[in-house]
Image (cartoon, rainbow, N blue to C red; front, side, top):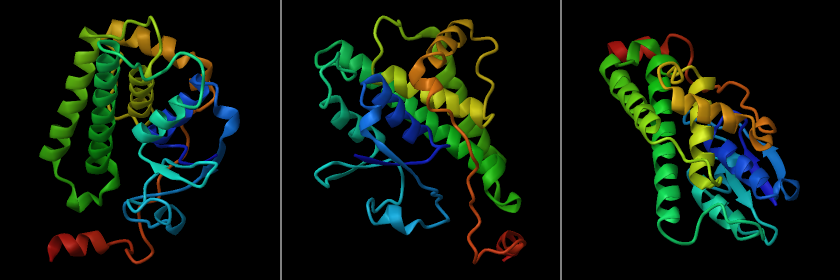
Length: 221
């Protein structure tokens, strides 16, 4: 199977950590791709009309995209304990953690756009604050509802990889003042699956047709 990947994507890392936890990592050929909302990657668009990674090309040629869909597929390929539980209440708890993690990553990425990636003249501080408040509220919720740690599931993987991206991009320093969350996060980051999949790299956002100074002209138009 071919996993189209990006080394600084929390969603792509979620899939690769999942594959390690499921014992499937050696069945994946990882293909590094660079994507950005303002930089078209034709190879990725040919597989996913949204132009985003992760994308999994299965052995039979089936193409899957979206981290949750890919993880669901991978969970059906191994014979160990399922990382997406079948039955309630564990299934609902795992899916709720996954939903929180995806929202946390979305809000963190949006906050980074407003603080760093968007041309300075086009940034809107109230929108940045709104996104950061979601990140902070999610981390506060996790401090009060830290995963129990009995078994690793899709929700734990999603949370750890989302938090690792928040830390990697310095969006919010979530560990001080949250001892329970911090302890859980440090334990999870010590797992072989996390240590084998470190985040790295920077996103290139500026297309060739968007020269330096153009943002100022747009702002003044």
